[in-house]
Image (cartoon, rainbow, N blue to C red; front, side):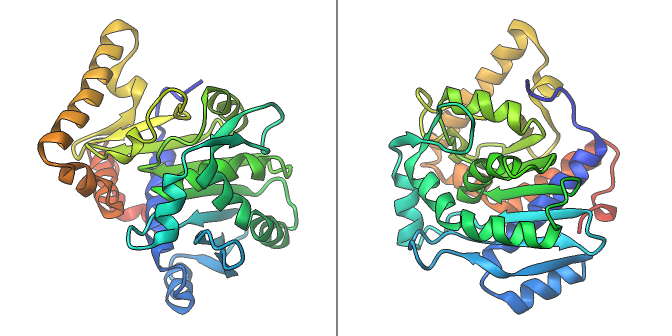
Length: 288
């Protein structure tokens, strides 16, 4: 079941995850990344996630708070100039997913990219947490990174970690309805942010692809879950459907530029901050 409401702590964590997702685009700059994280009370745990064997181009990093209570698995999003990223995004055939107890199908390109680095992730994660099931683990990413976070979060849960949360920004759909249903049970504390006219969350097309819960919409004025913004019942469904249709129409009229601009990770950062202010929260006192 999707979450009905966002707590202030959820928004604080979401903004932090957005900053980390932006920093993932610098994951190959270890010295600068280490310095930025340390200034925020977080320690980089090297080596960086970087698939040089499978050649998928998957990149990111793992970090842990200085008090050891939280760990972060962060994935870089698509870099359009990188052929490997484009190939990963384009490989939309469905393949079996091994991270859940029951059969489910997922995007072949995303699955291959996640598999390529899972061995490194579980080794680093178990090493830095001491396999402590009480550690809270946030799996986060933007764009392609959000898709990878969605695939890796259930794998982390399968290692016995009890508190696994996922924060994604502009993530495409990842799997079929069986995957989404089972994922929602395994990682219920998932927040899938979609900013305004961002077109990437509309891809790949629905049927057979289905999004996981919980949608958090932010439009540059407010932020909230489907329940908070649209309510329940027929009127809520109608308003949500109207917003989806508007996304396609405006993107078509702008030749896709509106959706590209709204997909930018810094656009998400600003929209979340504005949404927090609309709720009476101060993002300047909460970001990392």
